[in-house]
Image (cartoon, rainbow, N blue to C red; front, side, top):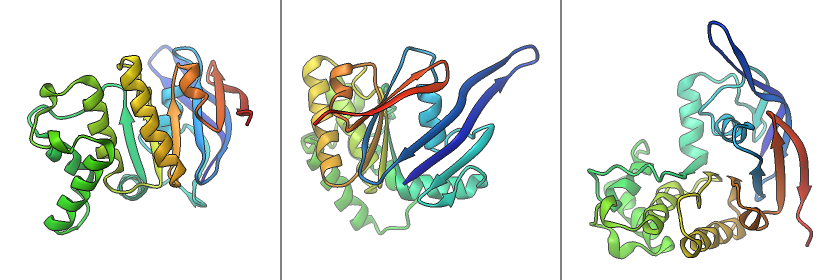
Amino acid sequence: MITLADIHRLFRSDEVETAALRSIELQIDEGEFVAIMGPSGCGKSTLLNVIGLIDRPTSGRYLFRGQEAGELDEAARARLRRDNLGFVFQSFNLIDELTIAENIELGLVYRLWAGRERRARVEAAMDRVGIAHRARHYPHQLSGGQQQRAAIARAIVGQPALILADEPTGNLDTENGEQVMDILKSLNAEGTTIVMVTHSPAHADVAERVVNMLDGRIVVSARRAA
């Protein structure tokens, strides 16, 4: 699904040049569950942003399902994200002024589907993560765990092939974190490819493969023992 070849990402200011990613070589297959680990500032989130077409590499090649993705213009990148990717963030990123159902429907806003189909997909996504009873509530009326499940519903409502999760359990207690991981495991078992940044060794152990980063480089990429 994803091939990254000699990816570099530099951030420049007037006086300083910082290498966030250095010589990244990474292959992610369809249906894999990959966890990315490493200390703060090692480049994990930057790598996730490059994979998610949010950030452009400074150099190197990025292939998504065989298509050159790194050099696409912004409109083509947006279409690729819309049609293939779902995002889950540590901070939930729900809009306070919208109900939970409306937040989830945002994942479909650029798809030319009839209202009935959009509503059916929103209802199915809410059922999937167990928050259908909260459809008319607002984010501030939900617990952290419920908000993250709503964020996952928003990510999956368009049935993406790839979910990118950046510390999806970082703001949750143990019980809610395990519930989120159970949802991700279930999605992966059904064929969704998942790439997850995490600091939790226990949650990384759920993945088929763990990629360890240090100072912008991949230092270890190892499959979990069966």
